[in-house]
Length: 82
Picture 1 (cartoon, helix red, strand yellow):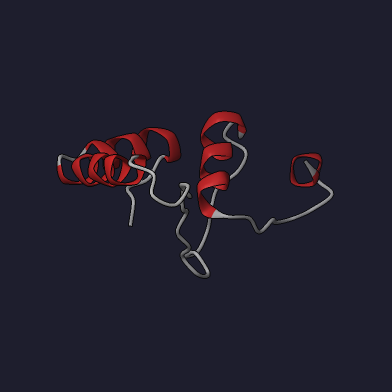
Picture 2 (tube, one colour):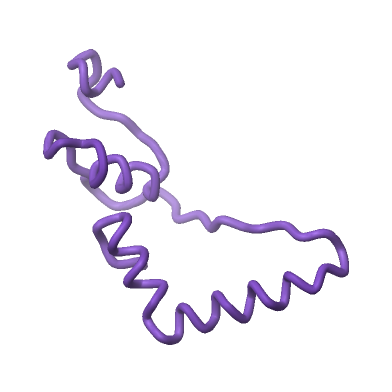
């Protein structure tokens, strides 16, 4: 908000959220510059013993192997995943 109103010259935020904002709401006014300071991973928690863990892991592996993950990532964030 402050960047859009001119009250700030720059902002620091996590990369996926910034790229999504730029692509969907930035109206061509903003760009991401420089490299990520430190790459972080997102996680999903399941109850102990949940059979969903293996299903989700298998689905994610398949999405990465066949290129679907990269296509979805690029669609929503505008760049290839690292």
